[in-house]
Image (cartoon, rainbow, N blue to C red; front, side, top):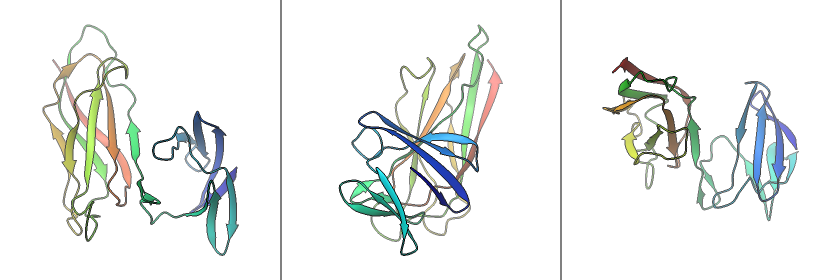
Length: 182
């Protein structure tokens, strides 16, 4: 299926029971979509009606940039970086990683009042991941909050994964890794 939302044209390819890949023509990039607890995105049809983006799966639902849950299930966003380092004998140290994200977007009640991002890293190409490290990114109105992880150790090559599941806005602009030769 294909649709346009907020100036972005999306082309959706679903391989039932396996995966869903979405091309964002405005960004020139692909991303994956999944329905919570499933492989791939459950939406199989699309229609623009009543000034809404409607998708069909087992029921008809509307897509919205202002809704941060999938019915009663969490809407999980995950970003994985390209590898830092070139996997040579040179050791690299990562004193900190900062997520550039819109802050101060916490929910007024319930889960997400103090939204958190979870970071893990892999030093072996994504085969194994570190323990989860959690950081807040600002309760409602805390616009000066920053999500920063400190003392992330040494490596030869590393990938960073950031996951957010709180029902809040997730406007991620990027990330910054401070790295030094070890």
